[in-house]
Length: 389
Image 1: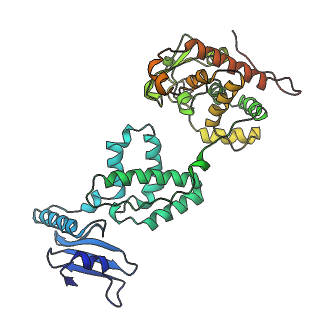
Image 2 (image 1 turned 120 degrees about the horizontal axis):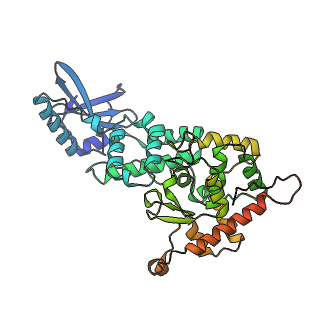
Image 3 (image 1 turned 180 degrees about the horizontal axis):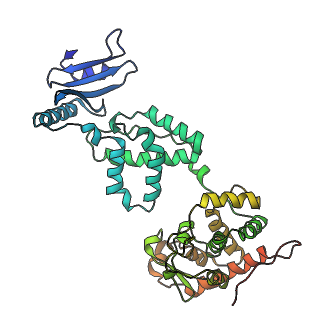
């Protein structure tokens, strides 16, 4: 059906009686049509012939794409057809295309770039990746979050929403017409619910430590993780080149703060390294240093089943180690520096002392307390194995 399209008509248009959807073709720009469905959805389409075949392109939804913008895009498509070029604009405006553009321009700079790409690949692309971003409706995102919540839990659903929101907000800053369909209240968890406070008890720590002793290289990795209060990825990616004179220097490129972090290793941590086979490459590796340890999920499930300790994550060891430092009498400032946290305020600007000796004492105090907990005097508890000194 042809008619002169106006913004007023586009805002109130309905399908003709008896039709599930109606295409209203613009009399001002040939080929451009406003498609209106019974549920009130309005989208822009462009109809043309290329190589003897009819093509229908989708520009986006109204009002996200205004009438003026739709006419401009239709004129550009007509020019492309006239030159013999395929005007498939929709292919460059899919959600996947926008996500890839975002990751290439801004997302790659983020510390969580790999994790974000994984979320996109696993949860977003299979369902919404091929959809024109301007046509994605809030209800579709809600349905996607429902499926993720059912399969992977509410936290994963909320994290996926955060990635999608970031991409759509970024796209909105670069588009004249796009408005993100995401609004407040769509998250499945609250920040207070996502914050973890899990700290392993002495009994749990003892069980985890001793059970891990039968897990090969994973055992050394787990023990070192606790003794250094480091992040999972920091230890997993550690190379022998980062170890020198009893110190482990985490390069700024692998550190959240983007600064080099020197961790003086306790004697217990050094003993663990001395017992490992030396090779060029990664310290914790299953193929001679060429590839870093992985499959944390599978190994963690085995450890949980054998130890009986449930509902904890590897990152909880970092929180546990920090709590043990306080318990061992380590000053808060020194403990925070051991974890690699940046001290804020005026002190952080003017205090350039490296605190090497203080961190060394802190890590030794942590190791001593862990040794007392794990190798305790309770009946039936096996004494902690120590390497040569």
